[in-house]
Length: 331
Image (cartoon, rainbow, N blue to C red; front, side, top):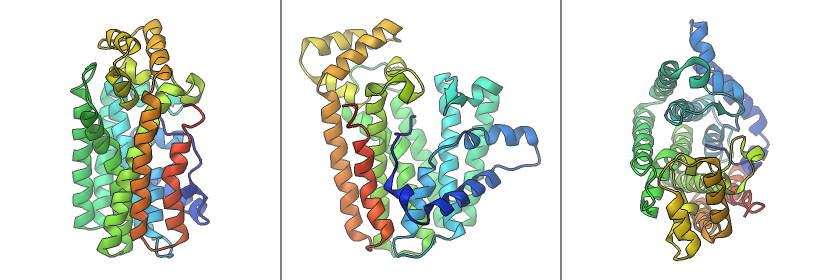
């Protein structure tokens, strides 16, 4: 998926530059093995970069009482990021993708078998880290990997399905995206020793933030330019993945919606993709998707009411709204 291009208030926290250095160091350490070949494959997307938002939210969650995040908190966030990266390795195999984060995908460079095994390796390393942080964290991360699989399967079972409904979409993104943000904030809170009310509030926050993240990502796949995306716009429709803006456009009784339904349902050529994009961009589905995302921004903000006031809490509260604003220039 495309990480929405926005400078998050979380990244502006005074300590976050140093914390991100700790995150980067811990990520490289986590995939280091005596096998140089495996090291290269496993660290491929780590080297390619990224905002590391899952470790960042874990660190911010730990800091809501004003204290610095421990190295164990950093490692807990890194475990979540490794799960995310492992899922990307597998996604790229399923999508037959050639590029990711501006570099060749692992499957394009080394082949599908290596990509699958390297993804499995990242999941194993994430689980190993979680096990050192206690049984609750280990069990939570294991359940989250299951939720990711469930969300992905829900998406796959509706591939090229023009009758896909919003319940299917929301179920899928809760599993494949939001659950990992909720787990990252929960792990940060657990490892930091917060009380249960704060742990649960931060989990609710992370889940709501993750929903906003995915809806924004799906809107940008429709509205952003090829250059901004680093890949052709409308990639999801080409792959038969019909996201909220498309579902909302199809649900409106209008000639253009009927035309869109007649185009979708099978793989698209370039002309069909461009026409489908034009229809969705011209309809009300994007605006209504933004409105839905705004309800999850409100949920995330409300969750912060049960979190102690601090600089980290202020940044957490501001982050979902800033994320949603990143689509305003395109909508």
